[in-house]
Length: 474
Image: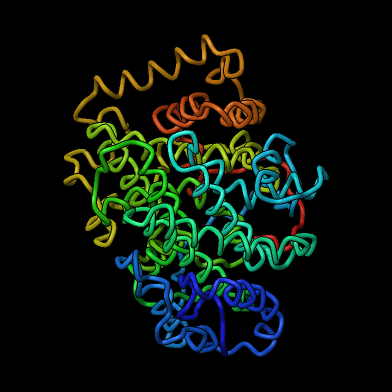
């Protein structure tokens, strides 16, 4: 089968029109591919000279190899407790109207509830994470356009109203590829960002071809599945792009992986209960738990704390900002109802805290930027920082911002549900200045992570509203 995103000419400037048509054809082929699905349909899509991975070589093998893994013997998920109670999941519903302006710079879309939701959830998944006042605006528009194209497979079951922009999203994706080659000819990092986003498109496309699972089965290679999760979620691409906001660049590919894992945890922790109900495997908590045979809460939590302590000590504020921006986005998206989840979580009592070894996962340990803590069950971020003065300074700056900024005033003193309008105002300000969003993001990572960990903990009780919802909304 000839495809666009899996083909050899994706990055060829001479084949732009052909590539556009190929990308559109890929999306239109999804229904038939799903009907005729067999385990090896994914691997057969890859051209032997597939262009994706030629720049971000660190991640090149994973879309193909993880796709092949589903054709082999799979592990049964271990018999461990998983939390299920959560607010219901929704489809494409908007929170507000502030994000439409960003999407309208690239797509001519009307001011309707659906397109406001698309601006928040598909285009906005990238735009809300990146400070385009500090990095190339055309690159952010381009990566956001890839995000729109990726929405067709990602939200395949409930995004039919998106189809009027299918051809334009393919055109914008090709324009982005051409922009990178023409305007950043010597930009190795810009090419890696582009490549990482097209790998994300590949992975999301592969994922939608699988039928929804009625039970959890798991590929055998934990590291491969974790890195694939960084690709299919887009967080590796987001991390590579946000790292360009401040120079000089800090960290190698393994550090980028580590920051990406801590970042996607902000999404996967909030989604964990929904994913459990839908038997979704691609959640870092699920992957770690499957391979360690015990709930992975402590291991994921320890890893994130260590990554952020490394970031504080090394002045890598982008790593803090990224995780916080994703948590802010998760709170703002109406379809997830994360503020309701957070406001109605009751933590386990002191005698029922997770007891699993925080350093019990060798794969996570191999990517941890810090040596093991002498106090592994001490999850206080400040205590883990070598430079506690810098931690205090970052937190103090955020709290001072909340005192003086009219849009963020007393963000630290209200419920999670009440914080949603603050995030909306930060997005409105972000068109010219990301200070508000960065203050909110930094504060949440440094000072109020408890509900994130409770969301993953089977012993933490959700006491809020519940109703039936379709697993197709995952």
